[in-house]
Amino acid sequence: MREIKAKEITALVAEMCIKSNCCLNEDIKNAIARGMANETNSIASEILSDILKNAEIAQRDMVPICQDTGMAVFFVELGQEVHITDGGLYDAINEGVRRGYQEGYLRKSVVADPIRRGNTNDNTPAVIHTEIVEGDLFRITIAPKGFGSENMSAVKMLKPSDGLQGVIDFVVDTVKTASGNPCPPIVVGVGIGGTMEKAAILSKKALLRDIRESNPDEYYARLEDELLAKINNLNVGPQGYGGATTALGVNIETFPTHIAGLPVAVNISCHVTRHMTRAL
Image (cartoon, rainbow, N blue to C red; front, side, top):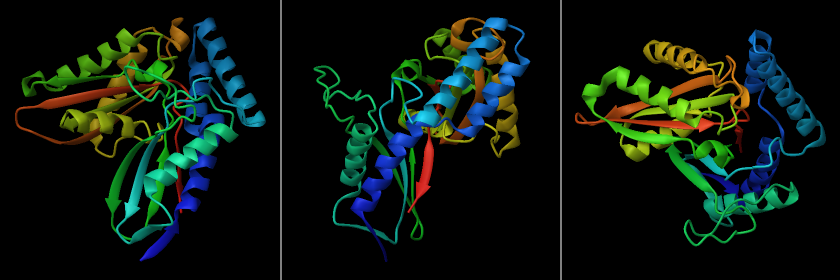
């Protein structure tokens, strides 16, 4: 049995909160630069250039890339042979969020009740998804999610008869409806299958994959390419001002489902698409 102290998790989470909010991932930088080079719309090209400059300043000065530093979402892979000592896993993660958002001067955006509101003033509680795996692995991924893009996400319970075309139409229509609201260029996570909540989690998890990596299933890799092309033909463009760079990538994740269902979820992320993975 491998032991990990809760305080080690707290320290790691605090560091991840700050770095993920201040440092744009390389796959996103590369995709924005590629979009800028291919844009024929001068306004779109200028916006993409400003986004890259903003990211450079944020990383250099370790300040947030965006004022909305998100609700902290975590995906934890916890080995069966790992024992957390001196505290609970969720308490350790939430304490890390509390410290990271305070020490990093990150905006606290979480309210204590969805209807009655009331800011918690420390960005807790975090949303935590835990997967039990074999061995003594402890790996944690943070994905701070701003709500300009989260609000544009959607789930739909399609019928099996809606088929592939129904999936394509729903994904493209969701992005079209979102238009400039989620601060494009966006990354689109698509979850297909399972149940309603499983599809939603899959769509959020899809955003964690490097957009330079296609789905390992060739069928879904082709669908990712097809959806990306259709979305970029919408002419929404960077920040909604038109252009060919509405989306930087489309990532699809799937799961088996019931004979009577075809759940589909679309999780839209802004160009920042913050995520970071670390292990202890």
